[in-house]
Length: 279
Ligand code: URA
Image (tube, rainbow, N blue to C red; front, side, top):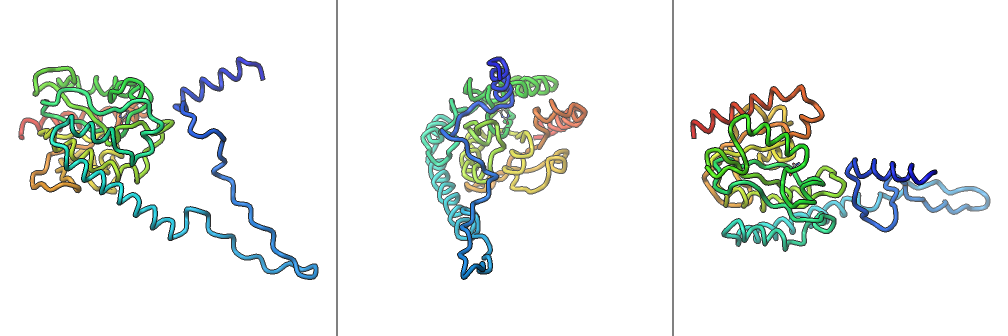
């Protein structure tokens, strides 16, 4: 293959977000384990036993993985509880070694915008541009998000709390290759984002995309069902009797792929404006 073709293939992979070398050697995750040949007796074969359960998929391995996730979530809960300011919390998350995505990310991505804003938006996880710059929602979907917010007079750079917004994500490290975060990663990170919201204490929350909405509303409903209604965010990992009004809306990266849904996000923004008038 000529060198140009290799370069084009490499560029295509980078465009697709596959820009991290995770292991030295390629792994074939689809390959089935090779079963040992059955012993033969006097020219005949003994009945072939069922193949052993795949490593990592036995009930014992699943119980151990669940216990590991819960132990890391408990550690995150304790660290989050000890943080009294946004700066404390950022330092605690940065020092936490319980999320492997930290090892492949370039930068820690905590928040952007005005910490005094009435509204806080929570997305899923940083992408490649956010990872490079250490700031949430700065890539193409972030640029679309800024335009959507501008339609209702919100700007992350505004000084005035009524016209500004504070932006973060459930995860503060980019999952390699922009893959969807695993349920375990979301579970472990939950105490951190819940404390982040509690310290920021917004009057209204925007949960951006299905992953953020289902995680923070502790729901299994789809984003299409969660949008269009007023929710109350109640943290699961810290004690409070004060819920925060919240809306769920489509993620801007979904709108880039499905522009026909932009009208629904416009409705969601008008709904948010009405909620802000009421709180
Ligand atoms: N998508 C997100 O959910 N968050 C970002 O910061 C960027 C893209």
